[in-house]
Length: 168
Image (cartoon, rainbow, N blue to C red; front, side, top):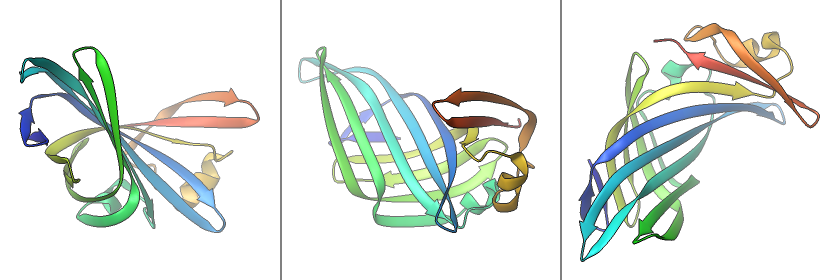
C-alpha cells in the first residue's frame, strides 16, 4: 500500500541496498530504498514517480539485526519525487517514522509514515557495498553469511568499493 497526499498508488518495484562504513570507532549501515510507482490520473494530471528512503543505523551486524526495528524522528531522509504531467516535483523530509518487520529470504517488510506519505510494503534486499579495504575488516563488524562469496569491485578515486549480493 502506497498513499501520497491521501491518494493510493500502485508500486512498480521496491528494492533496498545497504551501505556499510566505519565512522570513528563505530560501524554504520545505511538502508537505501527506492520504491517506484505507476502513472495514475489524478485531477486531470498524470502522476508517477518514486520514493527514496535513506536510514542510518548503528549496531547492525547482520541482516537479521534489521528485523523488528522502529525508528522515528530525524533518522535519515525520505525524498518523494513526483512527475506531474512531465514536470518533476521533489519533497524531502528528514522527520519520519519507519518500522522494519521480518526478513523472509531476501524480502524485508517495512512501514513508513511521513507528513505526506504512508507506505506498507516489502522490499527486495539486493546488495551491501562498502569501502572497507579488506573483507576481513568487514567481517569483524558485519556478517556476510547472507551474501554470495562472489563480489564486484571497482576503484573510484582513491576508494575501493566492494559490492556483495544477497543470496536468494
